[in-house]
Image (cartoon, rainbow, N blue to C red; front, side, top):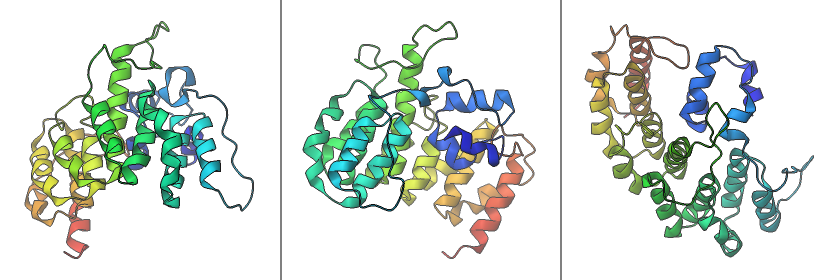
Length: 276
């Protein structure tokens, strides 16, 4: 999946920035090259039991076959792709077989299963994602994939990545109940980069006041993340505050490495052309 970025840009797009943890974004920017980062340092390579085998041609994927793919997925993002396919089947009969994942010590896998439960209207899924997001405890049993440069496991880094991924899952879930949870975490350093994206994906306009307030954040990156989310929400009421940033020359550190003013100009054009 990382390899697919090579044909696009050495910087992450908004979607890829959201899918991959902040630590990976930092590594990518530091490299300033389309070359793939060293895999052993990235959580994106953590393993499950066996490699997923995708059909080579047109086929009808049954609930049982998708559950088997979910159980054997090699990476958490492959597993999430399967989770979305399971949801598309609208077959709740898969839930009993997936229940063990709700107590998995691999929090990314637990989150992926929780996404399925939540999409099927089972509140255990939503609550599971919320608990991962809010859990900062070092006493929680969790699988640690993150490591220091010397190869030693980094529990604190793993907690950050688990919380980041849970915040992302709320964006994938698009459940308005997550809005107050995410708004309360806009200044949480572990998830401040992903919370605006998730609020934009959820699409609930109750997030607009908090995101508008973020336009005054001291970080140019945070200001642009808020701009992106407000555009996603078609927040025309935030146009005066966004226009006030048109002359903002502060540089950002992702995507095209442009300025806050550049992002504001693009946002104003989109909001002005979009119907109410």
